[in-house]
Image 1 (tube, rainbow, N blue to C red):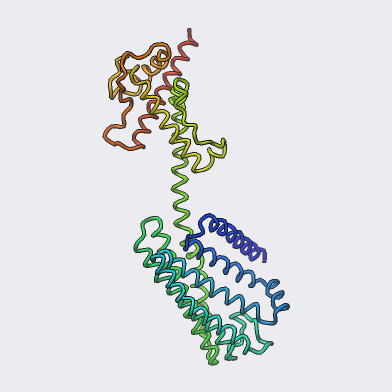
Image 2 (image 1 turned 45 degrees about the horizontal axis):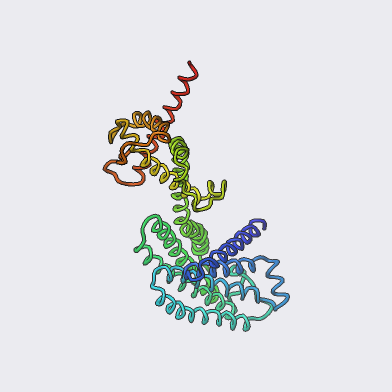
Length: 383
């Protein structure tokens, strides 16, 4: 019971989070479909709890909770199908197709309502395992729900496979996992239709069919959850690795940045406000601080490069030599203007003209500057 309540709580928290996302991106059709799918799933799951079902049946009549629960379940599968439809198809065509797909949903819900009304009150509201399938309305109730589930899941599978063929890693891995899970759900629910028909006809149901459908559903559901969360988790992990890398490189550049910032405080990029520790922990804030430090280091090196050229530094000089002359240039630049205004390429990235290569050279220079400062402090202490 505790696990069920926890699951329901998590589902409702996910719904709240999706509402926040929809408020920020109201025209995102796949996001809206995901949100509606979660709303229907959470409400259906809630009605699966005995306490909630008893309240609904007491207020609206016996069996109404089971009717609403199954109606919400088929609606959830409809919106799940729309998630992949909206992702794989052009917007206008996808909306038109979604409207047409709502017709089978309406037919399925209508059958659920009519069969519930036709079912005697004393046998309404039972679940699939305990329902009296010898009663035609009861059998048709579950057959209608299962047939629509198979149809919608098969449609979702088709759109998922189509979307997977257009996608790249890591998204494609999650999509193929999702497709495998959907295929398992289609097979399992098809088997449950067979079980329903056998029980309706009074035929014994083979044990392998019962256990097979249950085991297949038990396997397909977690694989589906992994599939739909894999892509987002993989991208989050990749973002986390970049975040950690930028934090490390930001700290490693500090000796160079501090020396240049003290010499040229007017080059500080302070137009965009920062928020202290929150920026250092957030992805966006960390990246902003990292790129800002790299740019400020480069700007400072451009400003000091005429002084370095005046000291005889050549392009391509090793970091240790650059660091030694950089300290001298920074010490004299405030009082002794450079005789030449020609800039020198300090710590160029070489043939690999990329930001990562540029940052690597800056970090080597920062390390050398830190070592040069340590040697200078050690020398003054020994004296």
